[in-house]
Image 1 (cartoon, rainbow, N blue to C red):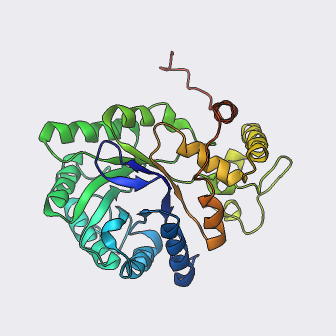
Image 2: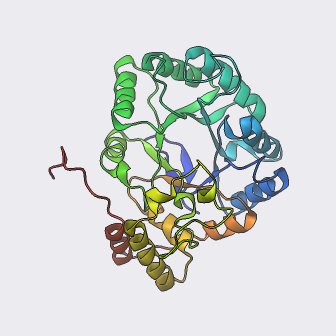
Image 3: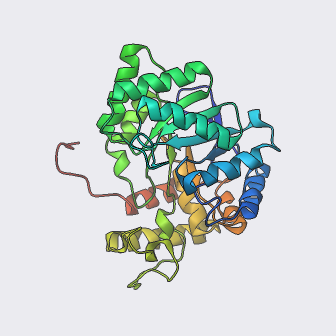
Length: 324
């Protein structure tokens, strides 16, 4: 496992980040601990969760496991926004909720500080200055080492950076966007903002809900029973079951055969080798799944293989104002 700086900060993280979204729910505590142990044994140091995952269960599982670890050798990231109670202030990015939420996350994680505290979503009901000044205060208090954002639009991200610079506040260290071979829209504006402003990029859904896992192929008219895409209302099969997707899968399968790696390993490897990406988040549901995804490290796609995958997955460019 190699290590990279998180954007322009001095914080070093492993080139893969372990996503804990399923811990405590679809993945029980015993299997979650096994996954965490195997990830660290492979050299992983970067673990991502959120207060809303399992209504706090994910953080509790990570926190229980942390008690037996060398805390300072790990980078623990969590997120804040989601509904954590019935009250009107139990969600969002207000000062009141942020201060209450960080203390609750610290209790569940059983730690004195959070390495990376991320705004999970944009909050249209709270002034951005209120959110950013509060996050700056949390960094100054020592409860948080760095903060980042997830699922922001490019103008929202740039505005956050500019306001922090204007007021002398701690600046965001990273963005956590949806980005993979089937979701490359961040390349139009989000990733350029990150490169220009020195933000790290931690990508989620590297296998696009299983489409890049090897379980999908041309000719399918519906997702496999029991898959994420078969869950009513959770994912849009029709949006991805297109000729574009099948073309990407054809090339992904061809490169996988050439490299003697699995399709998931190649899909994650493509992300690792993208210049703007710091670390893809791998959300392993089982220890076996984790072992496969760890196989994305320790080797390289050739420039030709990278180009073929990039060309096959190239999204249609919006006509305006993208002249070049």
